[in-house]
Structure formats: structure tokens, C-alpha cells
Length: 448
Image (cartoon, rainbow, N blue to C red; front, side, top):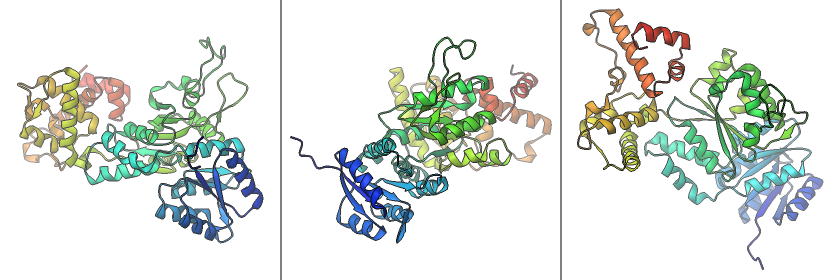
């Protein structure tokens, strides 16, 4: 006989019919319910009982559901709260998510959606193991990293869309994976997609799937990325690269929680959490009318900024030791050590490619070094980025401006090529150049 205590749910709503509906539905899920008619009763119950989930209406006789969310955030931050809002009150729901709510329901409450939300909320890992797991994957003890880990811990408990901003190579996909893995969807798929790598003519098929015979080459039914991520998380990397027509279709899929495959007649309901990232300034893209404002507001409910490596130089030594240990394990060779001058050179380097560039630099140095000691010269750091404070060149050292500018251009292009393993298209994107312009510069500099 199962004698384990039932999980407790707090229901806060001043409408008796809604409370009764929720009590009956949750009771059938073998959950114990407590009901409050207003904010005051809810706060009193929270003081006396430990709850596993709170469901609250937005409008209460003596306050709002937002006030209750804020009250819980201060006193029981690990208690998930789901907001019940009137149909069409999207702005209210978004405000609730920003305040710390786990998710939201719209009236009239759809019972399948209610059961799905409750089940998901009750799968959230307990508070104890979250920070430890994040610390093992996200290295560094600097204040920016401590703050980032704290934010990931909080966002993993929510279903809010998150926009992850940061420079190329700073670890945005790792952050997205951690948010997924530490949340209630951890056992379901995490599907990453680079939006800039999909040809525009194939985007709709890739995202939403297609039916057999819907176009030339469609020899069988194929599910899309949304269907593949059902129940889990869809990570849209470089989302700013989506063409405008695709942005419209993506917005509709997010709003309706349903997709229609190319050539299909019916929509398929999908349950995905959307995380997105880009190294571009998404707000500036909106201002330039290259990114839809309505989609921006749907994706950017909460922004999470990943710091650049320049902002956390104190972490460079720990990161370097971790990379060298991994390289030794991968190659079966003794672990290489950094000469003090090499470590100092790394700390004084600007790392435009961030952690990814640090890994590439050390991998190359690990191969070149003698007697398992990495000297400063083994790092082969770009001279143009070796001033920690970004100091400009001494004008007395420049004899010919054209030659100097050409040398700077050569260094930057070579660096971009090295960081992208000589993928010219990717290097051009990193430097914000068209491929045609990149080809011209490579030929002019004799690098083709």
C-alpha cells in the first residue's frame, strides 16, 4: 500500500465554480488541494502549509495574482506559481512570467492543458541539486558567472520564453541546455537549430514538416523541428537571421501552439518551450525593420545576457586548466601545463571569439608545445588583440597608413578563418561581411 504523502496544490480564485472545477480535476490526479478566495486567505495558508504548486487567478477581491507571485518569490522562491488569466490577456500573462510565474492558463480553462501544466510543474527538480549541477557545467567563480548561474537556476523553473544574448563563442547554447536540463522538461528532447544555416526555401519544411508529395523531392512524410521538440525545448540559435516571411509563421506557431506541415490540411498541437539566442542586437534589428516587433516581444519575455570572456578574466585560468585536462584525456597524452608567461598572455588577450576561441587556441598550442609545457609563443595570439585594455597603436610606429590598415585587416580575417576552421562563409558572417566582399578581400590580401 502506498502511504507516501500526496502533493499539495494551493488554488486561489474568488469564483466558486472555477475553484470546484480545479479541485475535482486535481483530486482525480491524486493531489491534495487547498482553496483560498482572496489574497489574504492565500497568504495565511502559505504561512501554515508547504505547497508543491500554486494556481491563482489574476484578479482577486483584495489584490492581484501578481502580488501573490511577488509574495511567493520573496518567501518561497522554489514554489512554482501558475497564473489564470482572461482569454486574450497576453500582456498580463507576460507580466506574470516576468514577475516569476512558472506558466499561465487562459479562461475558460481547458482541462487537458491544466493537467499538462500541473504535471510539468510537479516535475521541477528539488532546489538542492540545481546549483551543483550548473556549477559542474558552467565553470568560473567570477561575479558575472555567479550571477549567471543564479539566473539559470531561476529560469529553469519557469516556462517563460528566454532570449539569450551574448557575443559569438560565449556559451549561449550551453546556457540554453542548462535551462532545459535543470527544468521539468529535462527528460524530453532539446532540439537546437541554427536559423542562419537553413536555406530560406526549406525553412517552412524544416520547422513544421511536410507531407509526402507536397513538393518535388518530398518522397515521404517528414516531421519538423517543432514536432521533434514536442514536450521539450526548441532552441533557436541566431534567430535574427530568420527571413521576415518565416518570422510571421513562427509567431503564429508560438501563439497558437500548433503547426501545419507543408501540404497538410490539419494543424498539429505542439507543446514546446522556446529559447532563442543571437550575437546581434535584436532590438537594433527591430528598429531597422529586419525583425518583427511582435515576434521580438513574444521571444524576449525574459532576457538573459551571457558575459564575454573579457568581462570575467579571473575565470581564464580555471577554464584553461579544464580544457587542457580534457585534451589530455581525449589524446591519451600527459596533461600539458601553462608556463606563467603563457597564462599571463591569455589573461591579457581580448578574446573576440570568447570561450570558443580559448578552446581553439589551447588545442593548437597543445599540439605544438614541447615537453608538455605551453610557452607564450605556442599560443600564437593575434597581436591586434593582445592589449587587455584595447589600447590603440602608437602613431609613432606607423610609417604608412595603408600598410598598417591592411595588416590589421589581414590579422582580423585570419583570426576569423582560424576560429571557424577556415569556413569562409562562417568567417564572413562573423565579420559582418557579404560572401562576395569576403572573396574580394581574400584575393586582395593574397589569402585565397
